[in-house]
Image (cartoon, rainbow, N blue to C red; front, top):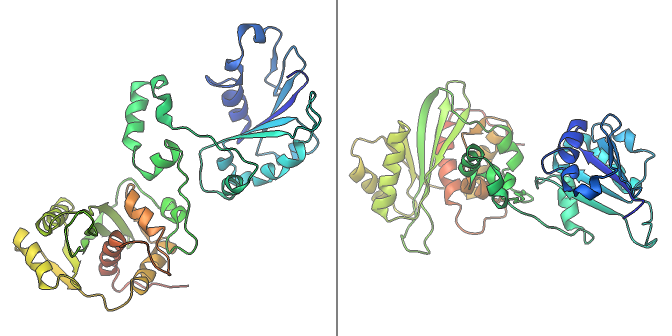
Amino acid sequence: MPGCRIGIIARTYSDATQVCVEGESGLLSTFSPAERDGLEWNRSLGEGILKNGSRWTVFTSEKPDSLRGPQFHCLWADELAAWEKNRAAWEQVPFVVRLPWPADQQRAGRIVVSTTPRPVKEIRELLKSPDTAVTGGTSFENWKNLNKLAQAKLEALRGTRLGRQELMAEILDDVPGALWQRANIEKHRLQTAPELSRVVVGVDPAVTAGEDSDETGIVVAGKGVDGRFYVLADRTCRLSPDGWARRTIDAFEEFEGDRVVAEVNQGGDLVEHLLRSASKNMPYKAVRATKGKRTRAEPIAALYEQGKVSHVGTHEKLEDQQCTFTPDGFDGSPDRVDALVWALTELSEGTRVVIR
């Protein structure tokens, strides 16, 4: 539309110029040859002018005060979820999108937000607003435009928490009151474990093995020589008793475990019998739950809060279960969380845990 004023804000000034304007899928690439005729783009000023009189100006979220004064008909905010340290810039946006449209004085200004949907405050508020129209897509819809190496790397992330967020555009939000928070797990995540002094496999056996039965929780965790704790693997499954026993032993051998800790409230001596049948000499400890799930889980959640636990790699289903486990209960059986709690409880015996 002739005579429009458009603002473009990105996390940094180089993001705004090199990606939003000049990038392979940037603004300049969208113009036809006829539209490019007479177009002026001044990179140093961050301003583009079309021959119909419309113009755009780029800004960085790092300088929110630069938004005091300019005014626009519409605005593009790129990667808003990455502005966490520069939220003052987003606070200025409603004040700068205030010009009436040239051809329709009653039409409200438009704000377009393109972003990875991280569960930050600004994104949550936008999604709740009745004035927001949401559209999305996955990275796999752009698959044919990526090189083979990029495709392989992205394919490796499919199904991981990072992949669900960055590739599938899922918002992985926290549940109010949950004992674990995703941001905390993410903050301490590692890709490889340091030297470990002890490794334990925690098991929460399922009573039955039908299609609708609970899963058998099997989680491997270790204690590092640095005194911290590391979640190494989630091998939870829905198998027959012989099947989950074999899976437990496989995990024990793969990670060179020191002990298997299994809850026996439901299976009793049968749990040990199954595991001993698969591996006679395996170090084994039976544990019986005498406290509620919440009471058992709180000291382990406190270890996370104190930064003493790292997840090695991504354990999507375990983390989903952790971050929806609230003091009021859990929808279904928290089999993975139970196995995690048993493993870390065994490893952390003698560790001072402060519960606030």
